[in-house]
Length: 200
View 1: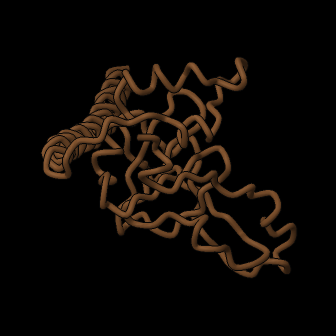
View 2: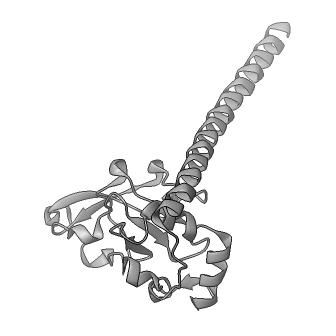
View 3: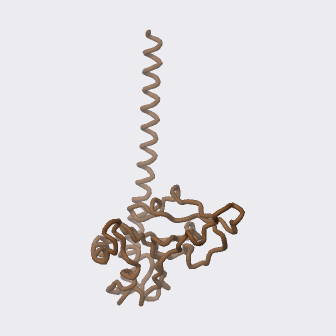
């Protein structure tokens, strides 16, 4: 079955049309998703989210909702799964939003599927611009999916989410370790300089 028979597939917002040009024009403030915030492992790094000042209240369809699968249309075509904590983000037009009601395909399974190398390779055959490697949103809508039973989807999704959670924690730990060792090296260098200064 084609993906648009299983879920709603639409492009994000053309933000330039809704952005407040002056502070006085601002009617609402949001956090905005951007390419930098999409970690290649398939999660959103909130540190890189941007502020978006809108000239009107935005329609809900352009804001992230729990269960959304949001995919970047440029390389490396990473998909992210939206949870309660990440709802309400503005989704710009360089992303495609996939919303499933969970009757035929569950979002967690779709999130895993779209991040597989096999699917990414198939979708890359529909690149519309060789310069930045952009995939057309219609390529997602027309993408053929072999539908598993909901129970089978849940098994795969559960394992994938567990793996993603663990990898995310490892990334955070690695970041903390980097900071720790930088500070430790800096401290040792200061001690060496101080000692050298005292000896002279």
